[in-house]
Length: 233
Image (tube, rainbow, N blue to C red; front, side):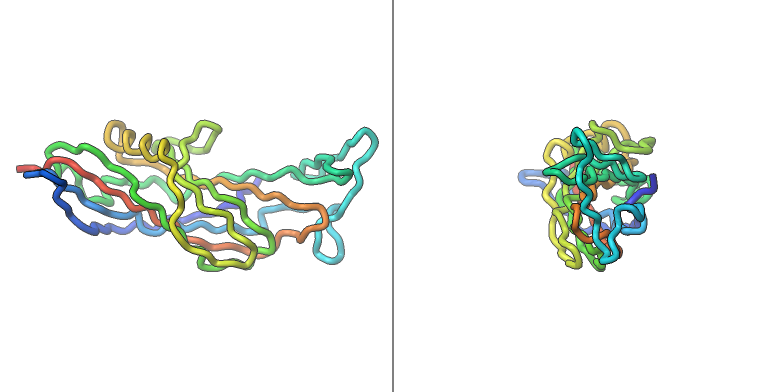
C-alpha cells in the first residue's frame, strides 16, 4: 500500500540562545531547532475503485447486503453502518525525513558540557503552507523512534499531535506535546543515542456520499529542543 505521507527534512544548525540556569555557576542551557520537517499529503495515494465513484465526484452510497455484509473494494474495507457500506478508516504512517542527529544540530554537545543533564523538546510548531485537499485531515500524530526504526507500531512513542486540518484551510500553530513521549525521547537522547528518526501517522475516513479525495496538502513542522548541564571548565 502506498503511503499517504511523503516527507523531506531540511536540517539547519540553529543555536538560538545560551542561558544560565537559576543558581548556577557553570550550568547553562542551549536552545536549538531541527529546521523544517516537511510533510506532504497527496490524494493520489488514496485509491478509490470506479465501483465506489459517482459521476459527481463523490463516494457511492451502497446499501449493505444480506446479514449486513459489505464486500471489500480494492484497498478499502467496507463495513455496514446505518444500512450503508462505509469504508473503514485508512491508517497511514511514514518516516519524516531521515536520521536526525541532535548532537550535530546542537553543535558538539560533548565539547560544550562537562556533564549533560538533559535534552528536552520544548515546542513543536507547524504551518500548513498549501492545501487543495477536498477532504478533512484528522489529527496527525508525530512519533519518534531510534536510529534503526523503520516503521511504527502500537507502542511507538508519540511526540505530539498536529490538530485536524479542514479541507482547503492553511492553519498554523503549536502542536500539543505528549508528556510521556517527550520524557522518553529526552532519556533516549541522553542515555542511548543522539540520533533518532521521526514518523507521522494519520488516517483518512471517507464518508458514503461525501467528496472523493483530491488535491494535496503541504506543511512544515519544526521541533525546538533545549540541552542543559554543567559547562566545561
